[in-house]
Length: 310
Image (tube, rainbow, N blue to C red; front, side, top):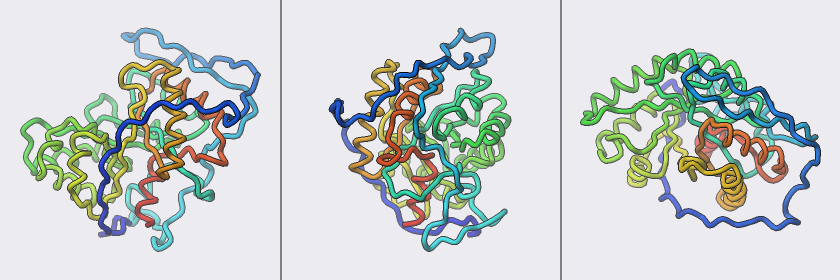
């Protein structure tokens, strides 16, 4: 109670099979600009890391889907202010809900060794969502830097092996203390809760009580959620990991093109990536050439809040 989250039953659908790569016909692609790209300064990294390639800075005159206004409340969900609002409502990134379009959300794993990642990500033509691990050094400072840049945060709070249901509360409460502005818990599906129904139930109960959402890969706990009714917990399942196997920039861009096709069919797609120069360059190139009248590039909170509004 008091979280601003309306209670309602939500059942996860089984993850669909990987789709085949389809090349868009030339006549269906938006025209590319001929203006050459200029590189941004290389991201600042801690001394122990090798230098990273710089991100391209496009000078093309293109329309982008960067959000401009705060998310509106659902049709039956009044807007809440101050401490009465749930963390999902309070800390979601600004987003324009005016157009009823298919949504693509890009979730990126934070690399704490890239010192200026918040500044780099704020230069993208849309707002991604970042995952912070509660065990990372300076995680609270990282949260503040991302939030100051207008980027919303997911929290990864790994449970210890052999965890009991009581350990879920201890782990989550401690993690939320470190990253209080997290809109949702992120799970990569490899923790003990992936195989333990009691742990999964307890995790979802705590997430719902906190007024946050849940974002997961379709393995492990994501698979377990197919048999769990999450009362009042909005859940977004990662549709595809675009760079987890070391994919090239071209392969990442093909995945993004396929995501646009899938979003038109299913209503929304959630992609997972990492804050590497190759991934960010591919995302920038694709986003600048996307058609904002056909696809909305959204933070993942938009998909979670859409569930609450239904």
